[in-house]
Image 1 (cartoon, helix red, strand yellow):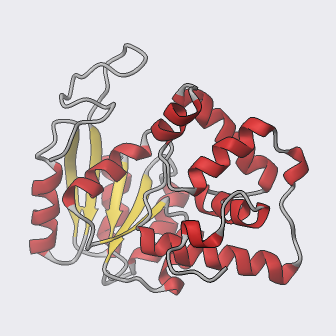
Image 2 (cartoon, rainbow, N blue to C red):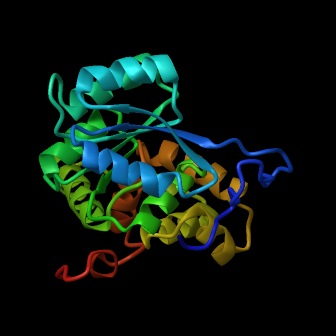
Length: 246
């Protein structure tokens, strides 16, 4: 199932600070039993992930999150009762410590934007490989936002167009040289660990830089920060979005 990352391959694995790392507790919200069972089998093949509950519709997802308090909710957009986007909005409002990740077949820009605006911390297509899904989930603990590459392109395009339309500009003059280096790496799709290795700094330092970058650029997430990187000329659009015209 790929190489284990910093969380380790044991539920009692030592974390980077020397403490014990608890299992990531996940709740699945999907109307299809076969899909839920398949995802559960994939996740529970890892010693550091535990599926603590399942929901078949939006209402049940909200109630089970309130009762079980999972770390992560894998939520389909298409649910009965209330859809996954409305369920996400309610969960974020009532159990803000739970990270909601959309796991769906919908690659609609509308669903993507509404989900993120509702508080989802990531949006992943069900075509993702099992190893990628596991890696994305583990990345949540490092402050990374799971997002399918094809959807990242759409999100970048949306924010670039919106900034151009409203005339707003990122506060580039407030970024330090190091913050620009970190942002350039993130814009290329690097994880926190990869940024740290490339710049010879610690992952905690990367997190601190990203926090400062988002505050200075008035970005709510990494995707918005990447959009700013494109505007700042830190990377060419064609470098980040294959096939894009210069």
